[in-house]
Image 1 (spheres, rainbow, N blue to C red):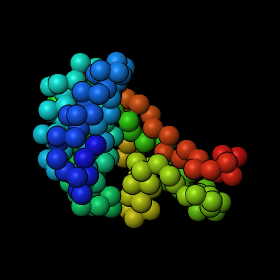
Image 2 (cartoon, rainbow, N blue to C red):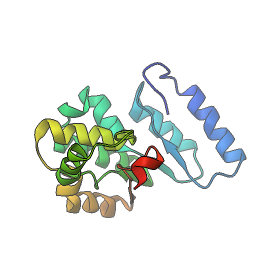
Image 3 (cartoon, rainbow, N blue to C red):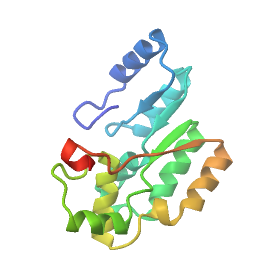
Image 4 (tube, one colour):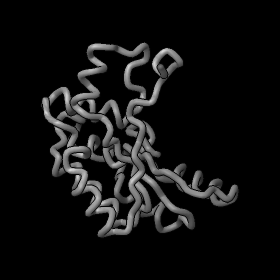
Length: 166
């Protein structure tokens, strides 16, 4: 995906060509720089295989940081991506207030290594509210059903080292 330092789509389209040549089963667009909507649309228009995204990345970019995202903004990005034709989305519903409390009492060596997990953990800590993707899971499923999309439940607390895997 693009980044603020490399926001051009040219390299992303070159990567897509390589994926097609190597018969990839699916691809992910993890863009966070440039016109993320336009980048995604161009990839969808050219990709013969399913495309996945992590919508919280785009929501954080649009809000400026994860703490400023509103629950409605999270779902607006999810619905916009689904409307564009994204086939599957990784959502980190398993990051909950309870899991954050446990981590605060039992810190990890590597912390939260999942970018999506870290963004949602920061949101939960800042707002002292439940993860909207967990709390409003039915809303998420309604969007997936409406657009015939697939939800991939991201492991927002995957271990970054062996010590954290226990």
